Image (tube, rainbow, N blue to C red; front, top):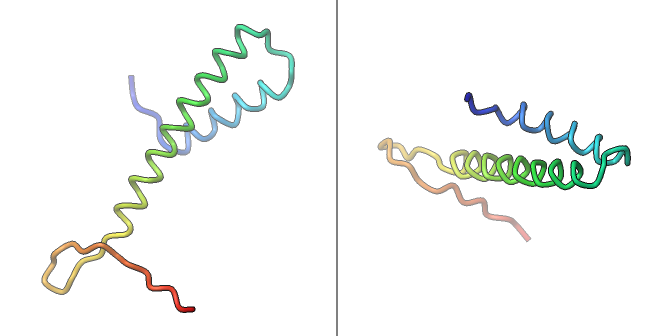
Length: 74
């Protein structure tokens, strides 16, 4: 089975939330959908954290990766 993209996961999560918010889902089905939604949300969160880690690295002049550190001014 092909892994879904971040965008596909997000769309599926939105659909699950709409179904659950409708109040028309029987309890047992709602529990399944809630569990699935939480798994998708964790997957999305993991992908975002991974992407953030990659973006926070920059190349030094010699081509070596370095952590990007933002200095906030007070």
